[in-house]
Image (cartoon, rainbow, N blue to C red):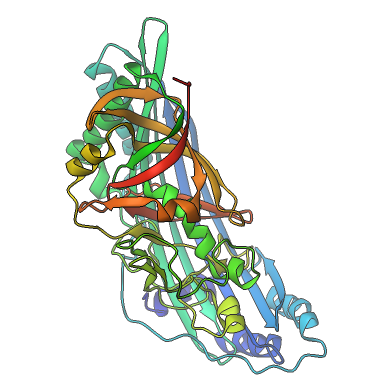
Length: 477
């Protein structure tokens, strides 16, 4: 966890606020509350987009502000402002106290403390000059075009942010965190005659740009995006119907994240709107399936040293050997459900209240070699990469589009297919997983999760696995 003194200059020295007076305001705000906090945030962010030989857009943004929250029973009072001043906080106090009228609570004890550090405090935005960043994207463009004459369009983007937070509680305690985050993406369109197909790849994490701007690193990203585009040029129409589906390792875990993960967040289960509500301790998946949410992985995109309520992140086992063991919890839903917070209280910014959100959610390895899984499928689809998807957490129904997939015929990989969509039901799909590979991998650091209008960075992952039967949408055969 970041040394609090490292953020004091941003929130006190620079603004003129005085810590003891701010603490007094927080204590007053939470006088009759069951829980709550003051969340201070300072964030710098940048983005550069290079498209077909020129800079298409460039941005640099600095934001700051606070969010003050008081919780009384199930009710929440929340006020926020981009003005970091004692006067603004004082005005917010009056707003959040309104929710406590007629309520007499005792503010819950603060979360445990941690000295763990999962990432450096480095600010990646000042790591290299603007011209060098543009030159990097231009080099990626030139390299892609030089690799194959079929390349028609290249889009590359570089994005980074540096976020500092400090959290005050009613008992006078406070914690802080500084979170770097970077991402490098490339998209390539290739053409063969009148046919055009695309491929894309991205990398990132909570670190500096250094790991991804070395030529060997960014060239590998371009090579992968180009490989996908050229594979798709050879694709044939996808079949349609019920069939076995093999999901590849790594990024296909986004299906697990959407179709299952959201249903394991505490708020939906407390309210009974999740397909998994009331099933704690019961078998919900095939034997051998263990799913975890782990916010403690070093420098991963979804990792957080502490969540946005100050609770240390954790390695949380959600499903163990097919049995539902745990939900992901923030402080509010944990208290109302009579369990402990799990370090999953996250918010997009100071202008948003926290709620249960995933960090890095993935399935653990099994013991079946990946090649044996494809052989066992016989005839079906091998899905390697996904694009967009939708899920209804109440019913568990999902639809996902494949951006890279292959036919499986006679237990061997066949032609790449285009236009495949996977349609199913999350809880049902969990029971249809027949083989689990020994090759769990995490995504390359590009995941963003949306929920109730808020977006946060996340990670996903899984091993190769065989789903005995899913509906594949494509062209009927």
